[in-house]
Length: 389
Image (cartoon, rainbow, N blue to C red; front, side):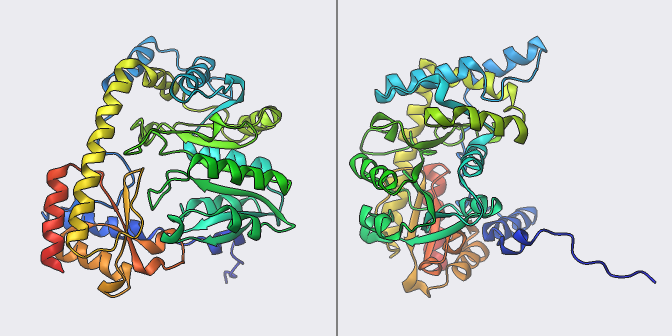
C-alpha cells in the first residue's frame, strides 16, 4: 500500500493568489477560438512591434554568432548608454558603475529585495499597487504593510502617511511613478521628501520608474536627478516597447554595487546577451523619435478612452498622467469588478482587468482598462460597452 506523503510545496506558496486577469484572458482566448472578435484592454503590454533600429541591432549581433555571457552587471556599453541617457534626457549624473542590467524589471526588483530584506523585516507598499511586489518581498521572508491610497492623494502615499506607517521593523518603502494600475505620478519634490523620510528612519526608498517615458502633458523626470541614495528600477518593456526581450535595469547607491553583483552572479548569471545588444540601439536618435511618436499615440488613445468612459458614467476619480491605464470606479455598476469584467467579456467581448488583482482597498469597485490598442478599437470597445450596460 502506498502511503500518502506530506506536501513538498513550500509554505510561501499558500499565500500567493492567482492573477484573476489570467482567468479572463483564458476565457477571451476561448471566445476568439469560437470566432468572436475580442478587444484586449486587459494586458499591460504595448501593442506596437519592436522598433526597427532595435531589430536591426539584434540581427547584426546574431549574424556574428558569438552569443556569449556578459558580465553579471551587464554589457559595459549598455550601462554607459543608460548613464548617457540619464544625463541628456534628465540632467541626472548617474555613473555607469551604479547601473545594473537585469533580466527584466522583475529581476531588478528581486535583486533589490534580496539585497535588503532580512526575514521578518517590513516593506511599505501601496494598495492598490502592482501585485507581484508583495510576492517578491514575502519570497525572501519579508512582510508587507499595505498603505491604503485613494483618489484624494492621486492613489499615491503622502509623506505623512509614510512617516506614520514606518515602524521599528520597517526596512524600506516602494513607490511607483507613474503607477500601475492608476497611471498617476508623484511630484519630484514629494519623491524627494519621501526619500528624506526613509533616510531619517534608517531605511531606504525604492522607486519604480518602469513607465517613466510614458507621461502626458508634462516632461518625464527621475528621482535620480535629485539624489543618489535611492534604488530605482526601470525597464525596456514599456516606453521602449521590448516586453518579450526581458530586459531591465536597476540603479543602486554606490556602496551596494558589489553586493548586488554577487547576487546577480548566483541568481541568473547574466541578462540575455542578444537583448542587451539589441537595446544598445534603443537610445539612438532614430529610435527615440519612433518612441516619441508612439508616446503621442498613447496620449491620443488616453484622451479617447477618458472621454468615452466618462460619457458612459464610469468614475475617473483621479485622472492618469502616465503609463497606459485608466483605473475606473465602477461602484455604481454593482460594486463587483470581477463580475463586471466577466460581463463585459461575455456580452461585449471587451477584456478588462478587475481591481482585485491590485490589492484589497476598494478593489472590487474598480476596473483597470488599458489603452494598448489603436483608437478605432477603443471607440469600438466603448460602443460595445455602452450596449452591454
